[in-house]
Image (cartoon, rainbow, N blue to C red; front, side):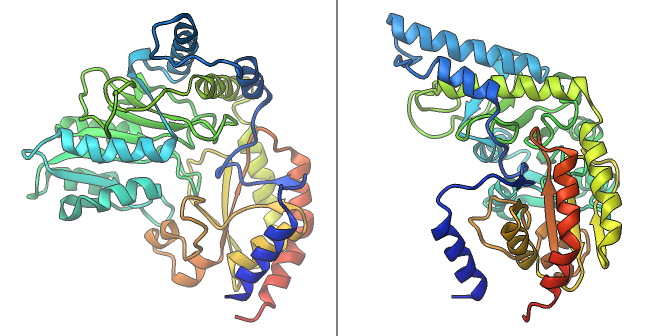
Length: 397
């Protein structure tokens, strides 16, 4: 067992629940919003299955469909385009695998961004040689010229393109509208993982040109265990899994009406917050980036445009694991990157795709902000960060 693993187990043994502190890991999961909590508490005693025909079932169905209509309106979609899932990862998986399957043998090719969420990358990996990667530049922005070339290359005709809207490690906003236009002109479906986009940038499904779009509740302060895949009218995907196909004939399983209510309530508050103060995250980001000048040997990763809520920083001559552990001792919670890799820390694949070397990719920390983050949180972080980084540089490796 490594010393780092031993330290983590000791911390885990002593903290069964996270104590109050400075939470800067909203990209992994945001605290439950009061509005979501209230929506679920108001319906916590609901017992009906939404598929049942009796009164209790009809009540559950009404709650589910009201939530579906609310979420659809918030993201510029139609209610019948919303397919509830267990989260963003499942939505991504369905989009890639079933989207590719829907295109048949005439269009077997799939193109995915080089810095996609692990669910997209792993799903695409199952398709083998049919998959091509859309590269990014040194600032983490998608190379649209290369995407256009790949769409017209002498290779298997492309049936599906998948490109994340806001990157989950960098916060970079990708040109999904232009990419969707290129895909559409080439006859390919276009999917975007908008999990980090919701609440950070204006998300309008009907305007962005996408055919498929993934969302997740717990990234905007909703409950864990529910997300959505938005499927444009006219796009038909093969059924996912076995069962009753309750969700739009695509996904099976008893629908979680109470979770859907919490999701819709959280998304509504997140969209309202963005409308009321669209620059809040950018101000917090600017405050953090400006303060990083007091920490020697730092590099902020990712070029504009950025969503604002995510700041990825390389601390030279450190291990990101050591930095986050030392911050944790100070009651500050950040991460080494995506939280969707079963706790396995390695070099950031996002930074490697940008051309950074292995040392830099292992020395990068993600600070992600959300609805609870205040300027005082940023100031607290900046107050302890210089000492933490210097301590991390003294750790033998």
